[in-house]
Length: 508
Image 1 (cartoon, rainbow, N blue to C red):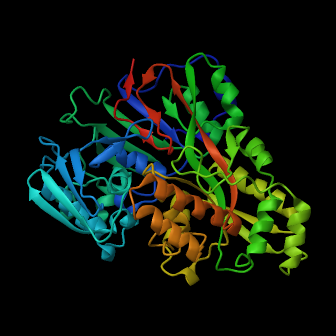
Image 2 (image 1 turned 180 degrees about the vertical axis):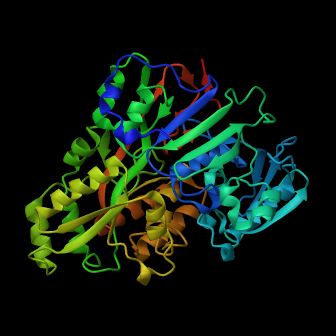
Image 3 (image 1 turned 45 degrees about the vertical axis):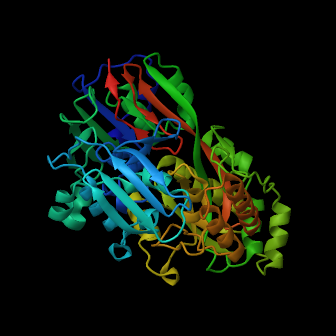
């Protein structure tokens, strides 16, 4: 294993490009965090979802612009009130273990995900499905317990991707370490920081994949990822640390990609714990943080201040304005709430370089208004368990969590309901702020109970306005997606939600 931390960062500055150490048809991807699992129905983070997307597939998916496309489905029909969906499946597809993809396989997976007793982290994607009916070998019909206009978008989420029923039966809960799908690459092995995948020789799409193997390697230290790329030990890395953009641009063998995203950054405050149960405190912390400085210091300008609970590129976004930087106002609100001398609290997040820098920035900003913030960077798996493994709100140890979120269904529902719905506390959903407001809950329910765009827009506008005033988060930024590749690599890109599409990757 390469010792990246001992490698001189100066290697990243080299204009000369050393030839790849691996065979011509092997691709190495450098990423910032460890994977947390390989069962897409039971993981929360976008990075791990990206890894599983190379192996497993769903009925629907998204193209590089987050437009809905059919994958293992060919077509669908819905009844007028969006309670019955009939889906026609693609024929001639096999799982990596040789078993057939068919309606029975869909039913096994959907029954597993829709059953709350299984306690799968992505259960909410199909929580409204009361029955999956096998109409014939290549047709399934989903019966919902209530109207749900965004169902097909939910089915396009990576969390609804399909395992081989044979693998589910053989491995049970351990399927997270033995994924078997229909995708372009097959699982080989997974260690703490390295996932190895091999070409699926029997892939259903003619001519793909075009490389023999993929390796996804976790490298939390920013400079080390750039050094890997410059040395030819990786052909693609993300994110490129904003402070090293010019380094990449100066290397004639490398190509920088700078794309808009739907990835929001925020610091979620636990609304059930003092002092964050007081809206004045939460508003004070928003006034205490200079969002423009956050973007400049943490992201070197490659981000935009977050001006609503949803990012601008997501449908039904409604701009709210800003929480201006006003330390005097912050101190006044803290005094009014009974904390004239501030208080002590803790923030945690992932232990990669950028997340750590973000938390340290918050620490410095909040110190100016008397809030002493302890920064606790955590390995991705430890953080996931600390946040999402809690079974009861009162057992949560979260005070502030620095996090990010992308609505990977491409719909506003998934930008609000998982994070800010009063019935979405972990482990059911991902409302780590433990925020609840009846009017917001009503608006979120109204937004998903209809397929009428005008009615949905009205509901989501109301929800965003109330959330903004309630300030369950410190609203921070919307990412720019910065990745880099060697110029002999094509066909690998990031979607606006930050996930990777690897199906068409090729080397020249």
